[in-house]
Length: 189
Image 1 (cartoon, rainbow, N blue to C red):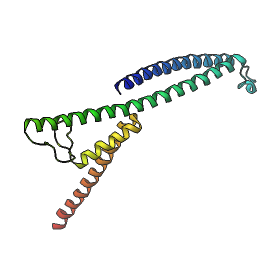
Image 2: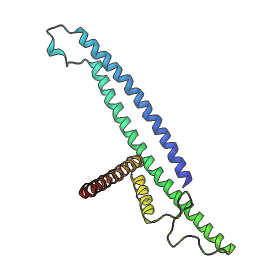
Image 3: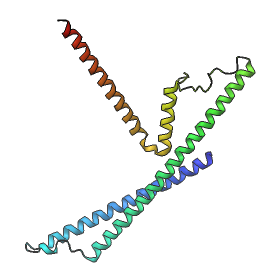
């Protein structure tokens, strides 16, 4: 699995280089198109409004190069995003296997040393701080792993959206509480 992950990393790096080449080519072609258009506009006479959109063969070829560079860039970027998604899935599998291996070792060690069968409750999981996660924390972790497996780039957006919703709910509750307090203070006068 690690070898497959490294192979995907190499492919992603290669596709990244390919995307950069397409981007450089696109920048050069766009500069040439802009220069050609400026030259064409400079040659126009005041009454030549009808000839503004007429391009010569060289400018047409540049536009075709631009279209091809955009297609190549889009295809390479799509492949690279798919490889990143696969790498994320593989990394999650690796992490799961590591966790299972460590859990099995801890269980074996606790039985072998006579300290008990397991330090965790049935189905319990430990976070980075060594604390047992409750159901809400486990659900949030599972939700983030699901989002990461689908689209690794959207994890930050998902987390920000979740934080925004929590803050909105918290602010709403605080405002309601202030209104209640105001009524109880105002009603007593």
